[in-house]
Amino acid sequence: MGIAGFKTKKELKAAVGTKPRFIETSMFGKEYTGDGRYAVVGPDPLIRKWYAEITVVEGLIHKVK
View 1 (cartoon, rainbow, N blue to C red):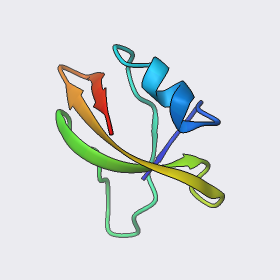
View 2 (cartoon, rainbow, N blue to C red):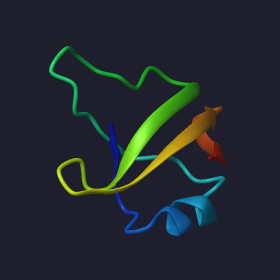
View 3 (cartoon, rainbow, N blue to C red):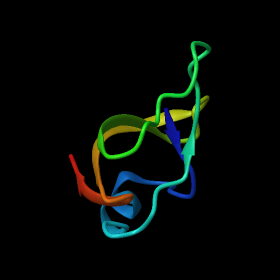
View 4 (cartoon, rainbow, N blue to C red):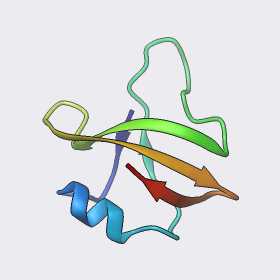
């Protein structure tokens, strides 16, 4: 799944506490189902320069690995 608005993983880490905007990439349906852990790529789902695992709590980015 892609995450919109972040050119680097460092920018994503600085966004802890904000609401994520996901770009769905699965042809099998929506991947985002609310709170939980998600694997994301950036800066674009097609141009994969970085990968991260984020934790979403109460609809906000809580942690970035």
